[in-house]
Image (cartoon, rainbow, N blue to C red; front, side, top):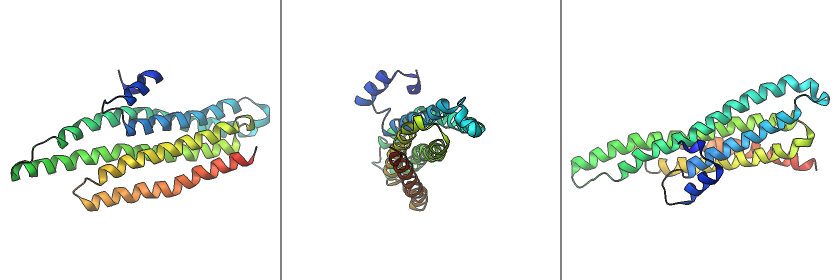
Length: 208
């Protein structure tokens, strides 16, 4: 069974165990899926209400985007687990001879690239989610405005958690030019979208 298909109880029980997966990457993807699902909840509670008839088309479009992001996040839970196994094996490769050390370095560079790309993709999905959530907060039912704020907070957590999984892997990369390129993208997303999440949360909080 895929991790994304497990019950909430089973998932968190495995997460709490000494099993290597799911870990921080899978948890950050699940958080992102939960966050954007809360955004969809705002949309669901807005559709069909006469008071919001003028934004109904916008809400429907937002819900389509949210569905796509939620599906991406769920796929990334299992993708994160898939890329961890070869990384774990690479760390265990011998390096007693120059030939072994060179082969280990070659393999490590390849698997670290994949191990970085998955949490980086989780970050990108979290950024897309926050763009959508901002519109749900602006256009959605006022009765569900707290859910939009919760959605932003949870997606911020997803973004930040995924970033740590990027940085721990770029630190180990031998290709420092590539590592710094990845770090720059991750830091740019952090700078832009933590601020966006905070703005959504502050706007929601000001309405109470």
